[in-house]
Every structure is written in structure tokens, then in C-alpha cells.
Image (cartoon, rainbow over all chains, first blue to last red; front, side, top):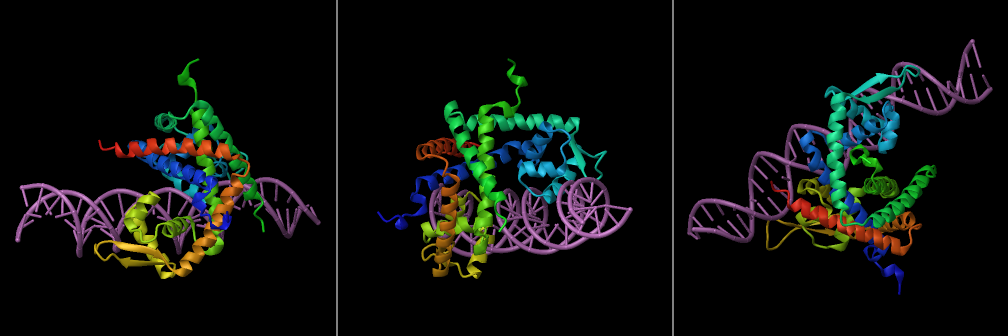
Length: 156
Length: 156
DNA sequence: ATAAAAATGTTCAATGATGAACAATAAAGT
DNA sequence: ACTTTATTGTTCATCATTGAACATTTTTAT
């Protein structure tokens, strides 16, 4: 009866979230193993997929999409550039920004990596019916919205 | 009509999983900010919560529960020990293993941290009705099961 | 026009995580 | 009993990530 005596892990919402976090962690490891044959890791994959989708994006915009700091991009992008997977060209109008794009080699690699990633996702969700997937997606959207408003509102 | 022309991000399961990953990432950052006032970070929190729940666990068992390597524990646990939050005592029967436990100070800190964490979880899932949470939990359990069997079966 | 504020990318030190190699101990096979 | 194999924890080099400080360039205010 006394709610203070209940442990966190007895609360359904808590257990539910722990499941989400655990699934993410395991999936991250599975992706790491799966794409290692291509010589890249999850952070590189995330970058490549976003460049594939948003050609000419800037480092800042990319960092924002990936929810990481700008400095992280400053460390990783030169690596991919040296490997000939991406290009960084100065913007014509704004001398501060670098416009990012995939090279043909990068595009090819990205398509291979996305195929692996998509295959993995379909595999892990194969037991989950389509409508259940949509319900999960809705729940996550709610959560994301709340977390984003929290993020903005933390100027204390 | 041609399914090969569809991009990954057009597939419902893909989008659904991206949402899960994004929610996790944002939540991780929110937790990091929320518990920073206690002088700890998520990896420490995970350790402390597990010691709170499983008194006398070994480093190996702890690493397995957290899905990290043993070496990681060898790096983090001495820090917490020096801060007087945990104790590492040699096992009586097996001279290899170290039995982990919280000190009173560690227990107090852990309770504070769990309160913060639980509050955050309840907050982000406040828009999600209880039955929806259960559906999410079920979906995650399926995913976790598949990922764990994949993990075992990758001896090629 | 000029000064102040903001944005973009870089560098650097600190930290967390990993996997491989290692030493000590225990368990299994012979 | 003795050798081999497994297990536990540590150390080390490597890398991803972060936040702060910085230089450059753009925008905004005055």
C-alpha cells in the first residue's frame, strides 16, 4: 500500500523503459558487429546515412541531427574525408560553413551499410506486427517531444 | 511499385526503430544532466543501481548485466571505491572474485539518484497510457530475445 | 558605420568503452 | 597427481564523445 516502499524496478513504466534502453544497447552492439566488415562503426554510419539523405548539409546541421556536439564532427569528418568517402567544400556565401557530400565511393559504401542496417532492423522487428510497430513509434514520438521541450526549458 | 527504389527511412519498421534510438539518446542526455548534481554519470548510476539490487555481485556478473566488458568495470569500480561509495571484498571460497557492495554513503546516494531517474522516466512516459507502455515493453522483449539469440549464434 | 552579439568550425584535455594480452586461480580431463 | 582449459580481474593502447576555449566570419544593435 505504501508506494514509497516500492522499488523502481517494480513500476511498470520503469521496467518498460529499461526494456527500451536494453534493446537499444543490444542493437547498437549488433550493428557494430554487422558493419565492421565494411570498416566503419555506428557513428560513421549515422554520418553517412545523413549525408546520403541530406546532400550539402553543414557540419553544424549534421551535428544537430545526430544529437552530438560540433567538436565531434570536427574529429570524425576529416577521417572520412581522408578515406575518400566524403567531401567538404566551403560554402559560397558563408565562409564559415563547410558543405558536406558523399563521394561516389562513399555513396556505394553507404548503400551497402544501409542494406545491412535495414536487414537487421527488419530482423529484430520481425516478431512485432506492423500495428504494434506503429504504436511503439507513437509512444516514442511522445517521449521525444517531451524530452525536447525539457531540453529547451533547462535554462535555470 | 519497385521495392528496391524505396529508401530505408520510408519503411515503417525503420522509422519506428529510429524513433526508439532517438528517444534513448535524448533520455541518456537528460539523465546525464539530471544526475550531474550528484556528481555521477549514467555508467556510475547503472553500477550503483545494480549493486543496490544485487548485493554481493561479482565484477563479472555486473559487467554481464550491464552489457559491457570486464575491463570497463576494472576502470570504473576503483573510482567509486575511492569515493567511498562501494566496497570490494575478496570472496572467501574463490580467490579470483571480488564481491561488490554499497557503503551506507553509496546507498544513500543511490536512493537519491534512483528517485531522480524514476521521476524522469515517469515524466517522459506521462503521455503514454499504461497499456501502451505494456505493449512497448512486450515489443522490446521480443527484440531483446532475438538480439540475444543472434549474439550467441555468431560463432562463424 | 561601428560595436556587440551570435554562429561555425577547430583544438585540446579529460573521460568512458573496447578488445587484446596478461597473471592468478579454479575446474575439467587424463 | 598432473596437465589442460576456463574463469576472474587487471593493464594497456586505441578510439568516440564531451565541453571549454579559441579564431573567423556573419548578423544584429546602436
